[in-house]
Image (cartoon, rainbow, N blue to C red; front, side, top):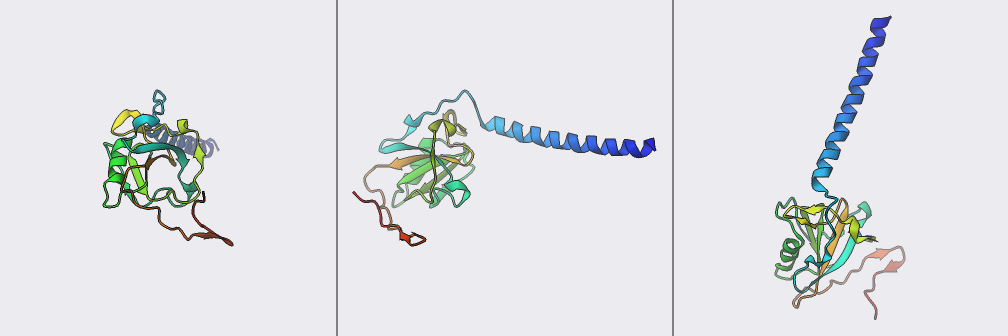
Length: 169
């Protein structure tokens, strides 16, 4: 009778240790990417670019910026992302950094992302740990105000009976 109880206890201990080890690994990886000593610095924009804010990444749908991307860039900084997005034959209007090493570009902000407090975009940039480059499912977005930027394309998206008609003055 004791022999049948002990294997059950060993199995429970083994499962608990496995779960604890997995949690510790995930936590350890996250701590390497996140620093609590970093302050959000929106003044890292290149000339002609302005910081728009920190946004959710399209609420889990398609990415907020989707025209071009630079992923797993070990030298990522906001300036590198803006340079990347601004150097196409038709420069893009928006650049955004996410999760420390990702850059996304687009002519428009896609979907319906929510603007959140800028301090939530607090993941250290892979290329300069004194700067911040978005967060998990959060994009630090910059707008290109330079001459020659591509026109905002006409968006004919519809939602129910409503159709996008552009910005009105």
